[in-house]
Image (cartoon, rainbow, N blue to C red; front, side):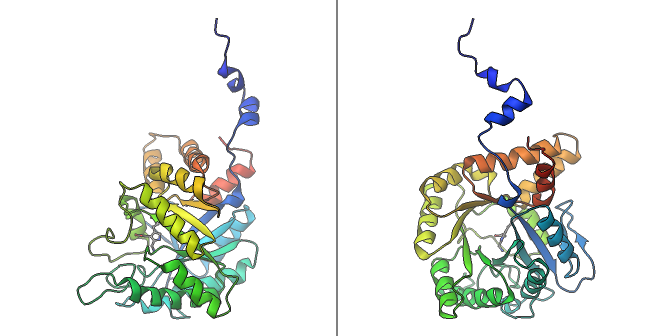
Length: 327
Ligand code: PBG
């Protein structure tokens, strides 16, 4: 007869709940939102069932709903009507992302953390995260100047946390310096430090109607490298990042755990579009239980060390948690 019986603590849902190590909370979730220029109402995204491109009007409702469910923040992405080589729309105060930020901040006030994606790919006609040199390569240092200008516009529009997702060297230091020089010392930086060149961004590119030719492997991390992800986080913290992030989340839980073990700032993870769509697609076929898969996936990301999670399920998941459904 076994003397040691770990099953004892698993015998009822009350016991399981009492001994659970990892708990999800709505405040730890951030909802990514797409806002499209020139549309009157929300438009569906084919590869992300349940996610939409918002209009400036429908995004207000989405933010209010998220705030009411207790979601911690929203991360805004712009889908501009026109794009050019320099990504001019990104630094235009009337550009869609800056406008959406104003509208959302006006609606939400301080009830939810208003965050913005700081990257050029949605705004450039070639779809890269930076501007190109004469050989067609992404010019790191010239791109930093564009990010600095973008940061000022986003902060002035009301963004409280800038999501630096372009993977340029020195981007955190450059943006911090520009913000500080402009007196915007309270605007915080979320550095997408360990951002991998991943196939899981596929549905997102559909969501922002990306025109990318080629790929991002010359600036995003190689999926085979864990140590390099930790190194990027260390560099970003030294440069002044307020929060560091690992992205995608579920294929990179080892990197997330390693970053969490060394970081002295909060560590977040981005459960990206492909992670969302894989679960939605399998659930639509009836192959997996949708709600359980969603809760399990975010629990795993949290268990690995994420203090916060960006997830397209943020509002729905917060609703379940508020109803006491957490497993
Ligand atoms: C860059 C950015 C991307 C994502 C977030 N910020 C796209 C990319 O790097 O290709 C992807 C998010 C997702 O897939 O959900 N603007």
